[in-house]
Length: 161
Ligand code: RTP
Ligand code: MG
Image 1 (cartoon, rainbow, N blue to C red):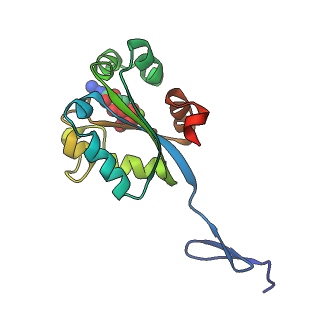
Image 2: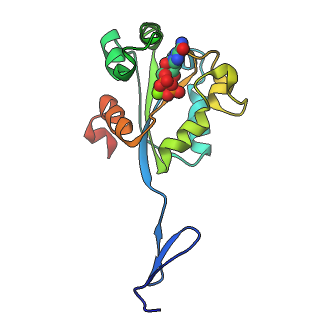
Image 3: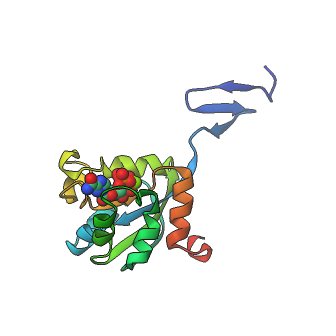
């Protein structure tokens, strides 16, 4: 086998002795929603993120206007819960975070748990801090394209360096 031959391994490909990582480095947008922020859970949620090994690239707290909430959740505008969701998301301050790591999008959604907090395992963030299908403590982007849109919705380029 020549020095430049690629051969598969358990975790990626070796080329000339160097390991090429197979996991993608990603950024994702996380929100601490108004229910969890008002209840004082933002600190505990930040601690869980850091314990998971994800890096917090950017963070801020803000109070969304109705228009800003509608724009953020525009993909859901035809859904029956859209109006209630926007009312909820504007009832108080939120925290917006950009998280980075290998497979960050899925890792953050796994940490959050399923949408319905009443069905979320107790060791997930939604299981611990959410109370219903709507009031579920946190948001996470669901794909690379939505992560890019949502990150840029909250943060300017200079805040993401
Ligand atoms: P998110 O976008 O906030 O991370 O939540 P998700 O992907 O788990 O769930 P999605 O289907 O995108 O729904 C967005 C948010 O809308 C609220 N919701 N209410 N009343 C209802 O039936 C209902 N369904 C969803 C939740 O706050 C959900 O996170
Ligand atoms: Mg979603």
